[in-house]
Amino acid sequence: MDKIDKKIVDLLQSDARRSHAKIAQDVGLATSSVTERIKKMVQSGTIRRWTVDVDYEAIGLPVMAMVYVFSTREGRQGAFHAKLVELPNILECHHVTGAWSYLLKVRAASIVDFERFMLEELQSLPCIEKTHSEIVLSSWQPNAVSSREPNAK
Image 1: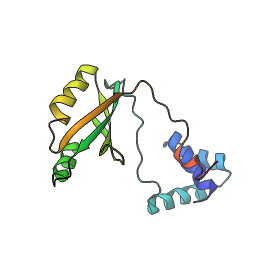
Image 2: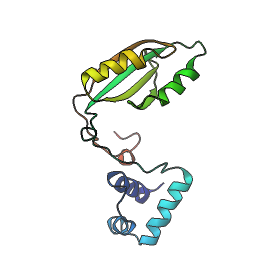
Image 3: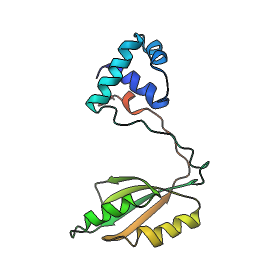
Image 4: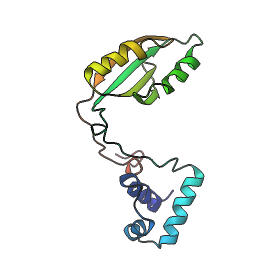
């Protein structure tokens, strides 16, 4: 992946509906070259999917929380993973190092709804021993992933 591919990815991350012609203009290539580069990135798995950036307030889920989960390792992880898929409040699940087993990104309609989710749905799952929640006050994306240089000083 060269600098032009990284620029293309950055442009697509900011607006995945941007036309190939506009991207070509922004990176200084022919439209056909940009189309071919995008096609290769999709085929190689560099671009895994096209997504929608949802305004969660507009759809009634303004509360975001990060939930740390500590789980046991006694053979019930499969049931835990399968159940997470059934919980629409969970947007992301990350298996993490340190004192916790997982970090979940959760959305809810209100603090009351979040409390209900925690008590009735999440904490009742198999193998969860404890959780720790932090309500997110605000969020932003300071940099696109591809524009970060590895080992930058």
